[in-house]
Amino acid sequence: MAEYVIIPPPQAALAVQGSDKLFPVRRIWCVGRNYIEHIREMGQDERAPPFFFAKPADAVVPDGSVVPYPSLTKDMHHEVELVVALKSGGINIKPEKANDCIWGYGVGIDLTRRDLQIASRDVKRPWEVGKAFDASAPCGPLAPASKIGHPTKGRIALKVNGTVKQEGDLEQMIWNIPETIWKLSEMVELAAGDIIMTGTPAGVGALVPGDKVECEVAGVGSLNISIGPRRG
Ligand code: MN
Image (cartoon, rainbow, N blue to C red):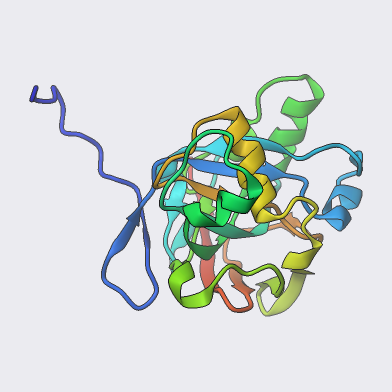
C-alpha cells in the first residue's frame, strides 16, 4: 500500500456512553426545518419538504468542551438536535429498513452563524459559511440503540446559563427518523460512520462568550458546553 505524502489527519470520532470505545465519524448530515414551530419562527414555508446540508466530520467537539466563539459572525445561534449514528448504509433505504442501519443516538448542537447563513440564503449562495465552520457540531456521548431502542418521543431541551431556551418533543418532528434516512439515501449513499442531526425545535437564539449551554434528550443523554472567547 502506498504511503501518504503527509501524516493523515486524525479520524473524527464521538464518545460512547459507558465505554472507552469511540464511534468514528465519516460524514455529518443535517436536516433543515423539521419542527413546525421552528419553521414558523424562521418565517419559512411549513409545507415544503425538509432538505439536507452537511458539516465537515472534524466539526464534532465532545461533551464538556469550551467551544471558541467563531470568526466573522455577530449572531451565533444554538440549535439542539437529536443525533442519529449509522452502523450501515446504502441507497434508497426504505423507511421500514432504516432502523436496521442505526447504531445509536446522541444529543448535539447545530451551531449556526445565523447572520451569515441568512446573508448567504438571501443572495442564493451556499450555506457553508453559516453552518460548516470549525467546532460547529458539539455532540455528547452516543447511547447504543441496543440499549435504549429507537426513540420516537421524549423531551428535547436546551438551557443557556440555567434558563430554558429551547423545548420540544421528538414526536413533533415533521419527517421522522426512518423517513429522514430514506430521503437522505435517495440523495447520497449512506454508510457506517455517518451521523445525522435531525432538526431543531423552536427557541433558537444567540450565544455569547462565557455562556454555559446544557442540552438533554429524554431517554438518550445530555451535552454540556461553554462558549469561549472569540477566535480570529
Ligand atoms: Mn439545525
